[in-house]
Length: 321
Image (tube, rainbow, N blue to C red; front, side, top):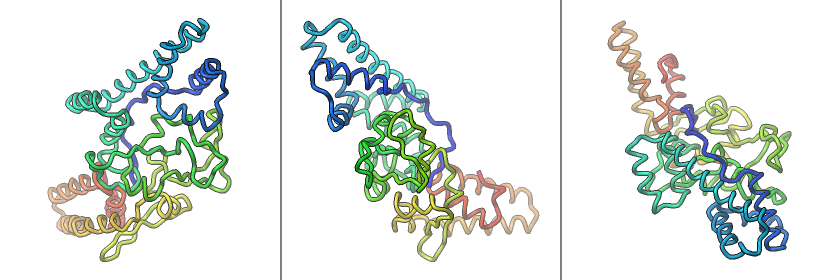
């Protein structure tokens, strides 16, 4: 599983803070004279662009009939959304090189916002799935993963989902289709003593999520590997690792286990060369092998967690990137 140690791109302004949600829900209720039920509320906030369109429609069609304070609040919302989009673009620009940002701006005119978010995350995650560390093809896979599900939680029907995190940048990751659609989906189980947050004001750290977080957790503390002739299987060392491996991600999908196994001959050769270099006492040879280990265990490498595990088992941890 990936461990994202690089600085995360600057957090864009939240397009929907709880205060703004409450403000516009109140405005919409006054305009339509119809209270928003929870189901309507979820649909109402499904997409910030639809909110912007609805707001502008209300201003255009109902402006003469609206009190001045409601008109002012609606106009403030429109400005807030546009300001959020500008802040998001600034965050993207800070995260990407000049050439990549130019490409991003070109696509922005024709691509949905989710594609823009996905492309930024793709660069940040070094082109890898946040869970299994398999290389993601930008052309074929661009599933923006909400770490905490935004609308509903599988197995918890009474929970409305973490709607207040729908546009929270820290809740976004990029996952491959195997991890996102075949395994995690809308699952988000907690430890037995975890307290699930129901509202934005509640403390998420009290939930005790079983899924390992790609930034806040070091998966190498919870996951080790067993190597056979044809497969490299991830094995848990604690309950969170167990849930992450067996239930929530495709780390042990057969395709992933086979792909890790293909790395073993090359890693074994590097270790053999280092052993020979150390036995010879030739510092230049040792330095060359050390540089090779650092390159092979760098964060950008596919299955970097397994690569580091392998070198540690060969007592070469001191040379890791």
